[in-house]
Length: 352
Image 1 (tube, rainbow, N blue to C red):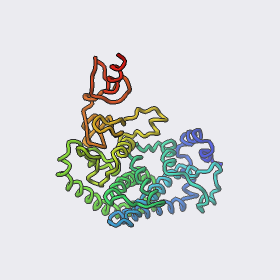
Image 2: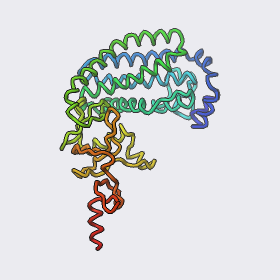
Image 3: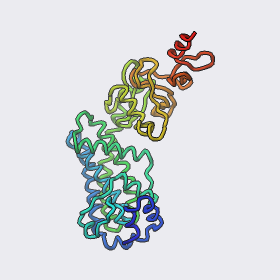
Image 4: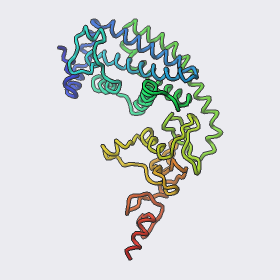
């Protein structure tokens, strides 16, 4: 068995060994399995073109297929790039199938996330956290479209999430798949990208036009944040009301919005808080009491806000809020050189 075949069974050790092997086996596998790779790349590009065609339309059915086909395209093309290192790298099972089984597709392949991890370990193709976030957003849409529905999703949000995912896929093709591609494969990529770019340009114009149409409304709000749903700079904090996105019309309960903002924009989830000990940034609001008061808030333009409540719109600079030395809650009350909330101050007086 080729040494890289041990990657699946050996986990991290196998990945390190495969990385040491570099690209010595690329020529041999291309010669034996080039027809398979051609078919995989062809399928991935077909899905890409279909996604863009559907995205250019406005009906819900088309947008559903735009999300489904973009994820299929990204997953297929990333695995095609990984297979250039060695075909066994895309196999999920510890028992690597025969080449005949691989050619027929009779095997279980790894997930997109696993493929990206293996590309980073084996070929130094590293995907940054921002790009991973865009892929995950498309994956969420894909899962809902495949297993449930996109009911409740606005066309504006679906379009911008898929468009951002497209940006990753196109960059991946140009930087990682097009270089070193065989002549016929390179020609296929170039022809597809030529058709896709024109359509994408029209889609980007739609997004830009909508954002321009919102500028007058956005300037009426002192704080404008990145939306956790569509990631456009269009989430506003109306005084006395829950946060809402003027672009995709995302308008959940304030506490839900705070958690989703923390997970998507700050990249701090309840899991990372519990498993990795990351400080949880959400507290009870000083103004309304909702668990929606978030620390370390920055505007979409990068200016520091400090604290903001996603339930009532209250916000305050970092210097105006302190953490109570008694109970750990945020407070704007200072007593005797110490930061104490009203409850802790009252508790101290009760002792006398």
